[in-house]
Image: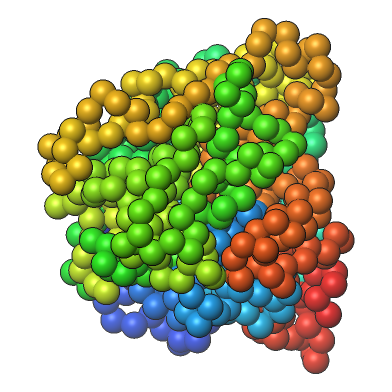
Length: 595
């Protein structure tokens, strides 16, 4: 579904948007638009379903879409709302560029911040499109029952995804589905029940495989439903379903779920049809001559700056605190779960690119060098990361550069989108990958099942990290990195599995702390951290400790303060509250602490 359907997407999404969103304002559809009657058949419904998938990239709330705002306001990677606010990363760049991110990162933003409204609009655009699929399909007569269940399962899976995002961000949000006739709905009910119902329907009715790679299958729905249970603290239900998904699940193309041998294969377009993909948002470079609208447009700011080969824009810099998590104990290869900052990774903060710098010689988890660009270490195949020359303002954002979202030099002809002032890329965004499933499964086991089984799941993830096949190696020739890599590790890597019986012997609290830590380093910079901290109930401790540490090193979070009882959720966009006015009273109610 990835590249062959983008022309169809552009036409169908625009015309169906005109019909469904503007019909209240028009006496009759404009000439050339697609009416509901025209679309009420198998081809029309499938076109609408493709449009529902297209909204996953978040760009229908941007200048490149149909709603104003900027592409990065609604990035599906949640680099602002999940990673920066979770302490994975600094905003980066400098304080004068995208200043609206600073109050979000420091938890003092109000409801007028444009980022909130852009994200809200993009997600409800996705909801609208899924509802249109279900509404129009009900009138189609040429769709056989098996296809009807498949289409409905995909539409309801997608609707659950959009609402899951809304729930994570704002908690109480309006529920609107294909049966809704009054669209100005209040946000006074908990929508978890509805999300569960949609995911359960998808799990029960979707086939195990699909004919096109980007579509949701039964096992993606099962993993997502188990994730929803985990967020609701329904640990026995999550534990049982994760057990089934882990043991039986396959990808959309039929590959048995398992970890890639090489960690970095998760972030290579050439390896995107791999056994670790549970559900991914499909991206493609160079399909739109006007810009990277299908090429990770929401992350186009997040490339090294200065004299780097990317040019713009210096955002999304790994935090010093996050990088310090990758230190390992030289004796046993395990992490420092509670005092990692006491063993800080050496960095080049305040050191000019013309000055000498020797990288850290201590033992490190090798995932550090697939996550953060570090001075003196190969930056994929672009050369040795030079530090300060690629940083916009070290004092503000720190010394590191992002890495998981960066395309390789050798494949830039197909994977890079350079049609506008900042890069796009063909790197898919992984909503759920199998390592994520294993670690969620470990959490469910620790809460409601077996500590031994939880340990086994965590050790599968650590065993992959310990496999030298997937490590970063020094170049054969630093002057010519395209010549390839040597057989010499780029750093002093040492990572081991937890000893058998460690979780059981030390108890549930220890096991959970190890699982939480593993999620931090395995999924760093992938948009999960803030939401994990909130659902674990430890966001106030973790983030205020982060502000205390990181704020002494970089100026971007010196005003940070997480307020328990308020900061768990973002403010309902003021624009949406204003639009909900009925008889002089707003139907939407603001979240606690923002009035």
